[in-house]
Length: 383
Image (cartoon, rainbow, N blue to C red; front, side, top):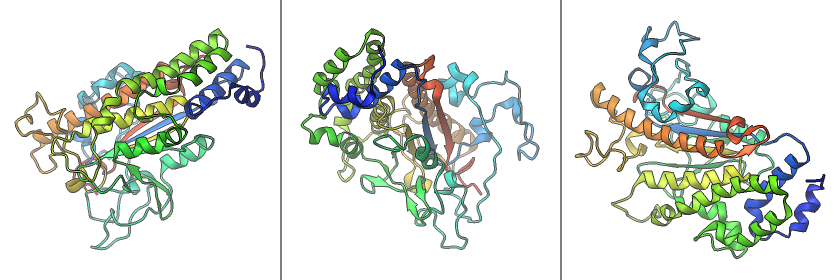
């Protein structure tokens, strides 16, 4: 492809409502065609509630030399047993870093969540009435600091969503923060997230309730016709991310509205539906940062009851699996392994999606960072 002016190229395309998804992709392809290296970096922050239980499911047995981690091993053996809870990420273990033993001691004794302090490292006011769920954040969270840096030119600096056990409305504030006294709410209603992400396209006449790829077919055809063979082939990789979402769009249709009762509600379906929306945004350049919360907050009221991943386990008769925070260690270990393995499978889905997109001499995954951590240190009652 000969050198072209990016702005004039996009203007000549005459993209309609599909420009929301296609224009960022087109800009990236034009940049590469002009010989410039890929400029995009991506980050995913995944927080889980109720602690990672490092002594039960996180720390490999070969490295459990000091229960209190007063003398941490800074460079453990690379041949340690991979934790079963992270089995879905085993194919990428050479690109994973397990970090254990960091300390962020809180002055509050509430013990169920670090709240905003999990990503800000700012402690909460002391006192018996200091509730981490009712206090505003004391500073910007790491995810939003990253978003300010790598997401300044995107339509959404970050896309934030998650699940919890109770419905408080389409959005809740738990762990993400724009700054001092400025919570960054995240969606817990898939339909609300869908409306926010694709609302502009809907306002332009695109029926986003059906297949997105079909709705923007005309714009796709125009873009394909304007690209040379190599760039057209790369475009197909981004379109594949949209197509994958289309294949799973039924999940969005089955998700309940938060205010409506839904005895058969599956938080797994909701989380996976929102993740696919986020992956479309992440792949196409609508955002460069995803922020995911799985039951963050007071674990007694917010940690979800998973009603699918419990099947085939000792929790099947119970009908769900949750944190089991007050159960014996053996029960907690099994429950947390099941939940963490499920979370790891979602991270593996992100890795697979980003790895399928070639950018420059590598893939989108090569320029990405994924962080998985807890909002409450290592156990149910952390300090």
